[in-house]
Length: 304
Image 1 (cartoon, rainbow, N blue to C red):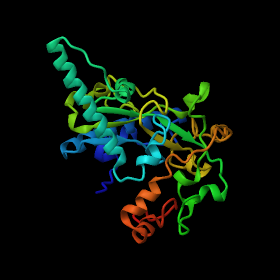
Image 2: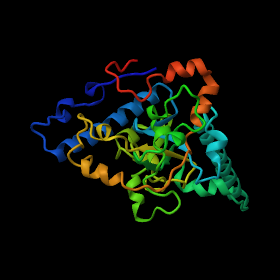
Image 3: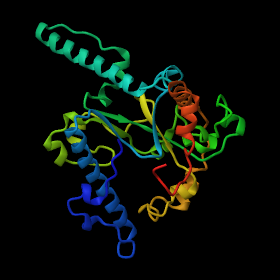
Image 4: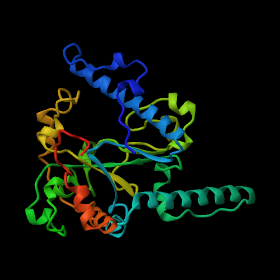
């Protein structure tokens, strides 16, 4: 089910944050953008909690959740083609953590100690049963060859319609990003909205930690590969990066910044590519053709 909201659905005082490019300066427009985003996340979180939802992601449409081969070699090739792989992976870690916490409680009662599993101990400080930050890796618009783009794809697909298949070059290397790692930006978050309290809904909030009281143990300042789940963030072509209705187009989303971010060519990867084979296998070729026919195309009728 897709629900479409406007300002009146989530803003208490929509007129106060309505953007007015003729009166508001660039910095004030950006401030209103962040304010609206924070408020939307809170109202959306409450809405989903009241509907009985659980794990919910808070990320943008140019960001795609995947699993990290840097965290575990060949993890992507092993599970990305499977439906529900992100959910299954998170549930595995949730069960491990619940088991560890139960053992810890039992050991406190018996004065004994145990050693946590290596995979869980790696991510424990970044992950809780209610909040999980997903670090991002930024991908530039450096083009690959046609053969590289279409590698392993069926003949009926056009890789140029898909950001995840067309843009393969990371802005910064995964292994040793050095001073450029900040360009990847802060992490986004998965939250178990069923655990949201009223205090969480009125507490401190940012676009990267919408419910700070719930995420006190985790941090959005983590590098890609630190945890098993991450996000590929695509810079996109200039017309997408500087779209007309983005209030940041005169502050951070400038032509200068876009060109600077597109200079680095730090290596390509196909970490996220197996998703397409899993999709075709799940629904069949005919339905996949139908579902993906307009992918990546700018349409006037957004219901297509």
